[in-house]
Image (cartoon, rainbow, N blue to C red; front, side, top):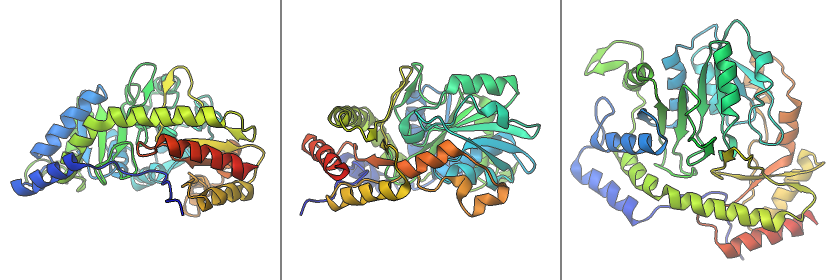
Length: 370
């Protein structure tokens, strides 16, 4: 029986093992203010990679989102505009501040928040527009930035899936006040868990470093309310190695995505992922859409592929605004989001997927859909 081709697999080698052992031998596993030597090195490297002036390493991507909103000053009574078609953490971070999430429908071509529909969702209570670079494709950040400036709003870009993506020649975060990143095990690069916030604004960076460590600017002197969101030294050491390998990882993802598109272009039942001219995908997930289908039909295709050892996966089958808890914030109808959630599924294109496996994935998709 063929081994399952997983949707994502962390690419860990001897360099990562050596980096972890080096930290263990040093005896410095963390630093009180979260700024140990490996963390500082990782921050400097990542800051350069995304062309930002500041980078603050934290213990996961959800912490990064929460901290970004806290640094802006989001609190009870505020509203944050965001898409519903994303992982729960995006909305969760909003609610953790006491603010209200206001969901906006998506662009059916890119699955990103529809930049043209944001304006209608803005109210006197709106404080932030939070975008998501879903599946690794940047949102339409220039239009979103212009809308935010018009209404004096901050922009937070959830780039958890977009390591290596490009928008109008620039990395994620360049059109936002802050970008938030995840290094979860499945991501384009990993530290196991872990996250990062990047920004060009010094006042945000200063607040973020305080929030990361119980509101302390120096040891045992809290100047504001904070949390314990530090990144351990072992994670940072992994991140330094993984970041060095990221260009190679991205090249393989892009190759696999290109080949899969070529092999599936004849399948009329499928709508393949699009890469607008001004954007460059990171291909965290290669997401296709089963045309004229409902959830039952889509799930049957996914089940058929998994029986053939292709790790097809649905992200995200329940939009956040339809989840039980988030209905507390009011009933909303997001028809494009809800339709996409019933029709999309993702196929493996991670760096460990071989050319032979790409052929097998494509053949399996054709077979199951037939």
